[in-house]
Length: 610
Ligand code: HEM
Image (tube, rainbow, N blue to C red):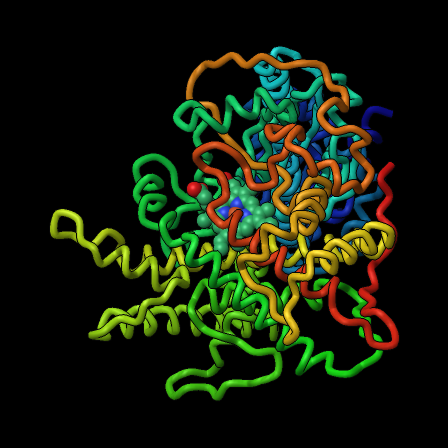
């Protein structure tokens, strides 16, 4: 019996190693109990032994199969260890006879080929196996690290109530994520949920804590840290916005806005002070007057040359009206370039786009420019990418030319657009040095476009939406403008009349209170600090979800709880610019003499305040 077993098993030793590589794949050789406490075999050695052994088989002189087997096992496990160890190695391969092996491999070459294939496959399998094992270990380690990080994050916010999330971010990509409890707060959650999160946690300061993720690190230019305090408490906000040094701007989150040059929005400390000192005077009373006068002309141009005598004007989306309007205003009052609705300029020599075309595309594609890396844009894979690259290059070229022309002109016209004022201020040298380099001039001019265009356009869009949804308010506003008799016969409206139209300002404020285009402003904390906070109640505004422009009528409204333009030393420089433009637009459009039907601005789905 014992002999038979020996004879039968000997050929298996050859099959194990040669014939059934599949068996190794599915039942990995290293997982066999035999190998658990033994070293991994050296396949090249095994190969030599197997060939030597098989040569004997091939030559029909099998010799002693058991001895051959033992020789094989000795190679694997060292001299003298074969006894009793060989057999489990071959068991998974099924039992065959020596004759079957001879039938299968008529020549030694066939045997060697299969043997080599087996070695290749087994090595590959082992590589995958090893890699997978390594990856799993790394993953487990990472999860463990994240759990510790997460616990630390929660501890660092003193367990103050709030959200515990995997992704605690404010980046451009997750703005499109849905709200998933425990994972992400959902796109634009601050804007969409307004005060709800504070109410549900019972405080006007809540925390967001999460472990840092690779994703967060990659897009960290846009993101907050792994712990954030969201503050809706006006007293705390006042403290934070007033003390710039203790709560500096996290400028690394604004890096993407510096592609034309460093600027006031994306800077902090001494650099910011320098920019603010030079740029602030450009937002002068004379500039406001220019904003007003030019806005009136732009709206008149719209009435005369676009709307004409049509009985009904309908827009599917009000931004189709307000985006170009705000662009034309910043074009002329910001860059000193008048742009008309219909008139198309010629493309000047050396350019591929008109100034209007470049400005329009730049304003439209800012988001693309912010989220798509430059090297991808330069590949020009899509039409939008090609247009974006072209428009940004063209606008940059226009600004360089405009700066050169203004510097070279001997007699400078008195002009009060932001561009001219900034350049004039820059020429007054300090200690024999110009204040801003050209790249900084362009960076700052460009940021006025970014900061001022979409914010104003979307605010005006909401103004019209709210008026369309509240016809009684629209009527009151209409009567208000009419009774003030400020509109002249030619349809013009003087800057001096602005103060006589407070209702327009209240409508603007009420819209900004409910739909602020900038809904959160990041700050970092430079030192250990204590802020006092209170429980959340809707105590700043009565009936906060109702559109009531008259709440701004008297002086009693809570100024510290009205923050669309930020507050403190870093408050918006263009606030008066926007207010002037908006009041002029609202007054002109709402009071437009009715044709047969009143101008209609259609809005999207109804806003649900609940
Ligand atoms: C509805 C319209 C607008 C809103 C709601 C608005 C809102 C804001 C907010 C919240 C900030 C602070 C941002 C931060 O610190 O990160 C800011 C800053 C700024 N805004 Fe506006 N803005 C508007 C229009 C404009 C316009 C029309 C201009 C210029 C033409 C402008 C120029 C600036 C500048 C230069 C800053 C940076 C101030 C500094 O950091 O010192 N803004 N704005």
